[in-house]
View: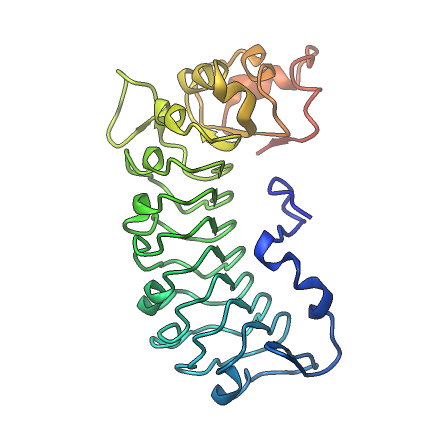
Length: 308
């Protein structure tokens, strides 16, 4: 199942899809080099000696409070820890001896930061941190060269990780509903040339148009340099940016659009040109007044229209 635009569905990365046959278990299982643990009230992760030869470990949906300080697991490829709602902290040394890890899922945990040892994961392909509602800080990520998926949906991060522009292999960047993210520095997104999916719906909206920049706005033309881009979710605050989105390649790849705090009237026919699956209108009095009037031809076609 893969649908990055519906918040009630969980995207299963290609690397973990094959784990579905063994994740559902009612007891501890150690089959070959696969470990899964099930049991109500589970609070502690397996002892460090059990990690040594494991390739895939699933400890999802329990109440784990503590992880080993420095498990020695050089063979570990997949680590699934999502929905441990009592997990608040990861030791500084936790990632030091798992250099072959390819998939790490910490979604819906209570962690507020990730340790610097994350940079040891130089073979990591997918990092999922969805709905980590207390996550405010991330280490620099420039060393995670193979990373293809970074999912930060609905997290309170205030800024992008340092050196993120060096992730030349990043294909999917999910930042939807990162409401505390106020600024994206110019030049970062345009350097992520492998991006196929960029979702900044209800996120930072400091996009501007060349020649009318104010402060740290990012020129919307940066997106045109992403030749692999086919799915875009974006938040905008000006009619000029909406106009740019309704021309050329960006018209067909824009899937979700949030128009926020726009003081000018926006011609809905511009929005109609896009292949939208979702539209949000926030703090745009002129556009909202039009939408609640008699002429709803431009908006009625959208399956989801949000007003706030």
